[in-house]
Length: 468
Image 1 (cartoon, rainbow, N blue to C red):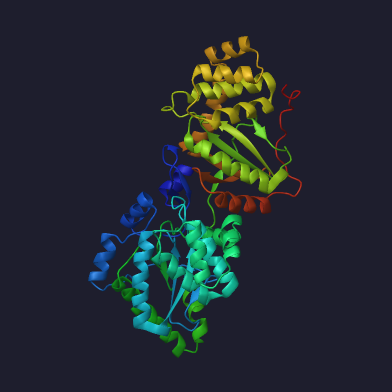
Image 2: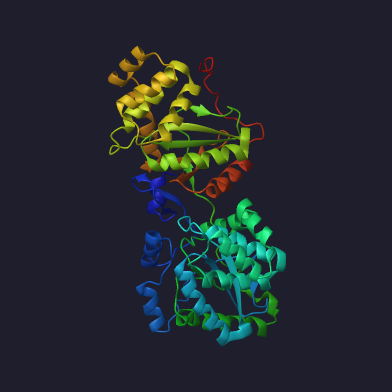
């Protein structure tokens, strides 16, 4: 299936990158368009006009899908016998999360034991103190349990104006934790696995901004007023009581209500049968998974993605190899020359020289003038006569055009665009944009289960002797 068809069919959602529409596999039906636009623009979720209209009429759309959101091992406030479970994805630095907390307090005061709150971490990347705050809160929980966690949770939201390290340590001590352990958790990312699990879940269910709620599995986006929750809760309380009257144990009500809900969707597969076979590669030819990257040397998002690819290489070692495909975008005036430059380095000195040039070019995408490229060629010891002839005559145009054609066949219009392929499979998983490493991990792990243990990647071109 082409990526463009997945976009048009609603199986993918838009993210930011260089160039045209780019996408990632989407979860089940998304929130209303206005709410989604609000999240996409700001990274924080706010109620839209449609939400306000439904609240004003006290109407709940029974066709709203139910999502199977697990409580798992997350912090819980309230008993398992509650009639309503509200799962919140939140960020301690998000002002809308602080605003939503007032609503949740009011709901707890009104409904008491009927409500159970579940907290999932979703520190947004542009909130630099959100992840350290999450680490501090989880360290408090690890030392003192859920009660102390919620004390810390409240303190963090009350002190959003100062989430520096000393403040986080001070608040952690106030909540009952040891200062040295809180400080160590922040520095060493002690609870990274828990935070990453929550982020993965948020991505799976398109909880793409904060705060993002699921009320007995039904989505509610943004810092909504109490009435918005009450409209959904009235329906859910009625359903819960009917289940109990029919014999369901109160502790099993939440699981029963979401049992038929929508789970995380299977990632969409894209046709990978016609990728160019002889492009530059890094890693063993027998690797069980290949990450194909379509990229542009002048694209800042491609430069940003290098850190993520480095993490993948470190995590998976010889199990994963990387293949570069050129997709110079027309509005990047130096991108085509840079692509030719890297290809010529490969022609003269092999893949090792290509990757050396690749690393130089992406280390500073603003430094790609002809003088800059010539300086890089000299630094790599290339034959400057052949170099000049190659760049002036577009010697590698056919190779680059083949990559462009492959990108078009896949529906890739922006950079960076990736295809994660297991073994010699004719299908791959698309990852488009400079996304976090967690997204890649999920798809690589899936591809590893689909690939034979010995790997069946195509043979890599032998390299000439190493660079001087």
